[in-house]
Amino acid sequence: MNTAEMIGSVMVRDLRAARREIEAYDHEADLWRLSPTIPNSAGTLALHLAGNMRHFIGTVLGGTKYVRNRDAEFAARDVPRVEVLRELDAAVADVNAVVPHLTEAQLAATFPVPVAGHRAVTEDVLIHLVAHLGYHVGQMDYHRRALTGNSKSIGAMAPGELRSATPAT
Image (cartoon, rainbow, N blue to C red; front, top):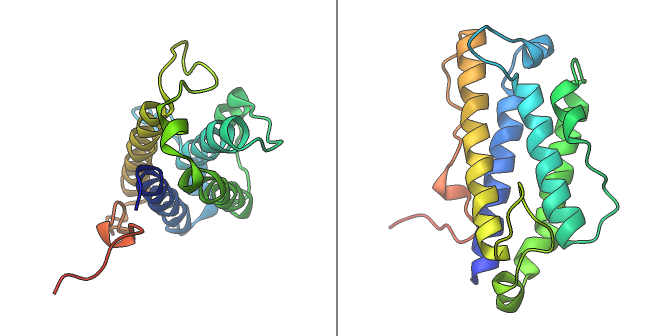
């Protein structure tokens, strides 16, 4: 397994964890609930993660026609759960279609667009995107537990979901 395949497998694992977080809400309206100490709802974070991955992976690296509207990711409210899940699934599809196929030369090249006003090599940007994804999945988990009172884990960040994972003997 090469570097791009490893990075892609972690991205897919964490996007699937985000999906499970959204599915774990008993009441769809709770996806959009806020509290004074939690500024973003799980629905907002899911749309943000999907938009981020679809833009940087799908459009920038893969040449898809997806057009990101970052402001809308944070402004949207009461988007149906099925639509949120569809966006996360589209992000998984973009990652699977692009990231595992990147060459070592592509990973070493400067990322095609600046990210937050900075230039970096593609491999560094992809690792940043993995960390960004994991950070927000953790926020989604906290939001669900704090606002619904449901402390059950969804099994985020499961090593067994990595592409190369096999049961230990």
